[in-house]
Length: 231
Image (cartoon, rainbow, N blue to C red; front, top):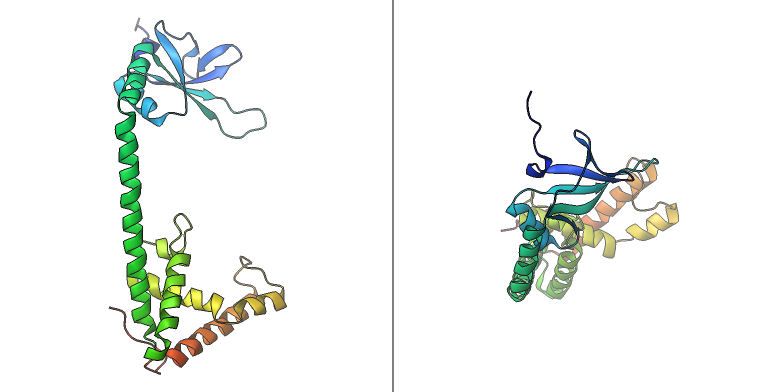
């Protein structure tokens, strides 16, 4: 007869039920001696406990109305939890300094990227000198609008080159701020986000595209309609 593995030696998913802790394969379980529950919430402590050895992932089961199971925390040896908590206390100041340094580094990278995008937009616009200030204003607005972190906008699309992002973002900014695109939407009672196949919306988009081209042509050094090459 093959001996059953000791649950205390396995990493398991266990569920908090009315009858106690339960595992789909092993059934009802008793928390091993010397173990305790660690609630979710402290990522550092949780990572340390997981790295230290065996633990059980504790879950709240799905209810009768469906939905997803909810993570409660871990069940793990008390000694490992205590060690992780002590490490958290000892390294708190160091980790706080690291977070501040990381945030500052990300801010510098973001500022550099926005500056690069602004410069690229100005070069692509290629406005005549008397419209240089307008080009700078468009570039600043474009960079601010297109690079919002987590927005999913074109400025955050790493699959495109910076040049491509600059062109698409600048065109969108001009469409929204230097054409009657929004007035046309209001007059047609078309809301942003409607199905792009809607005939009215597509016609408004085509008209806005022509207005953007006319705007660019009116302010550029080269009146060929294509603008200068970025780079």
